[in-house]
Length: 300
Image 1 (cartoon, one colour):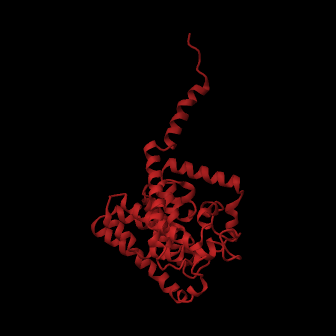
Image 2 (tube, helix red, strand yellow):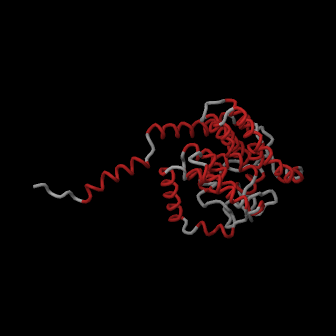
Image 3 (cartoon, one colour):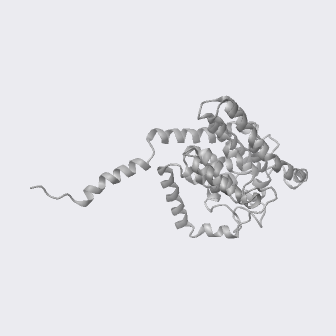
């Protein structure tokens, strides 16, 4: 006579299957760590170049490096998750020009690597780096390149420093969705109710073109794109951009690696679009650029 099996013994195979599904393979972990080390290490190697690039770094100096005491990344009106300052802290502690050069190096290499990976195409890398959004990003000094690095390597906390851009791609698979939700729940345990603080965040900017500016029909286009995006991370982010109420032209830099997945005429068309969409920002920001240099110290 056989003894009835214990309920826990029936549950264990399902648990083992679940763990196997959500844990990345060893090769995937090694690949992600290698990419992360390549990009971060490479930013130090190209530092002699990025440190001499004539980039303004306005937002990095005043907002992220907290040289503006009334409005910075630590302010209650900041639109960034509370863990962002922890992840940026190693850079923030450096002299601001040094940090900006390293940040820009990470952005350049993140876009280059992400554009190269799909088809191992160096022409895609050249085209991705020859678009206005990446240079607008370097000019203004925002950490979107770090968010892209988090997305490429699967490091969820780093990707979520720009949640309005990356959240859609992080939900593309069950495993990524699990770790994204798990991290968000952990962040809520550490900083209870932090999403509610976004009610006090400052989003207004004359160059912003989210759906609150362009109109609600854009949301319908974004929803249609989201349905047809499948599991492609850049299609999901492109749809998410249209669903975001606040979007800046330099945010489109995270979409540039999509050039690497295309071929022929389509690649050229994709290369041209970011420039067309970003021209309004250059027109809007241009008058204020000439007066900005005098308000930034050359080194600090």
